[in-house]
Image (cartoon, rainbow, N blue to C red; front, side):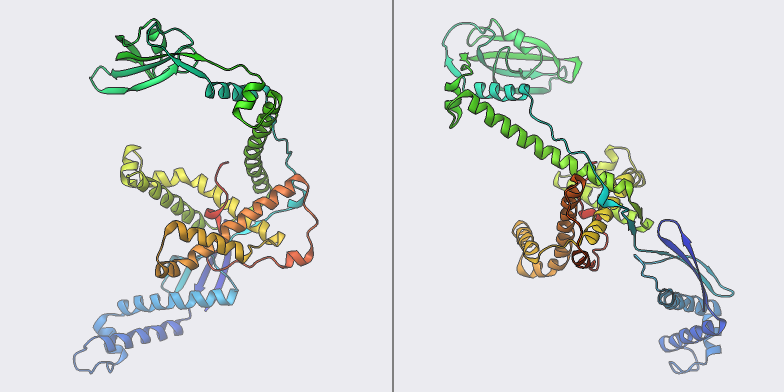
Length: 448
């Protein structure tokens, strides 16, 4: 056979494979023999009918079609071997020409990633510090948590007092909107309905009032509200002093309490910033990298996202069909909507995996086993089911942990704190296992 190859965009190769007529004839004779063995042909025992008789009986076109099917698989594998191609997935037969028999096949190749000078990547690291306003908010919350509440048996509701109100509200159609009992401090805490506070001021204990209020979220509609003041109490906030600090924890002074609040707020802000910083560093690396992958990979990632959506909907008691109907959306439109997210996930996963390869990162077996034990406890699978699932679960866990390590290393590089890469470490980079070459869906959370 004669093979010509043509490089296509997006990591694809078009193979044109021309098969010699003698080989086509041989394939047709093999198919004819199968027909003779499989079917009764008048005048001949099974398997003994001559080739020409089989052709007349079943038709040359039918035999040729079966031979083409047989040859398409054979010559495709031979072409891959001859050209040394390692495809990402199955090839796509684009065209067949009968005379001479010629196949044109589109072959998806494994993705290719070039990170460039990733070791020079720098992202400014400037975690925010807590403001005095934020410290004051925490202190005020602590004051409210430690407020002194003195119930009273008579009097009227005034700003600064804690009230307990039984509410029943209905819309114009008579449907109940809100019905419950609520406690809040007049003038200091949000009431369950806008405009309610003004109607409560001046009410006496056990007094009931009926009035209209705008419906939350839709001020053009009104609610009929029945409110009964069922509780009334004086509400005293403690002073911001050393006594408050000693009440809320093991602190000697108010300044000790403030220092601890600043420390906790700074740690919280740092955790948030670190997560955002890692994503910014990843985005910067993806932008400078050259990433190519076949369209088949993108379609598979869209399939993964749709499967994730199905699982989410299932947990809510919904299905994909009703979800699409609510949004007036077709399955094809959903795939197009998910395409940018799928492409982003693929690029992030490929870039991180390549970084792990170049940095010589690997996942210790003990860490992998510990993660697997956690999964086993969560799924509560039987031993038989676990043994069946374990290879797939372990491969996915290994990919996820490896990408997490790559993201951590990227952060160190972006900080400018990475040590020089030793050759020995680089040579220890793990080879991808089957099904693990493109762990895009196991990558970091898609927050960019």
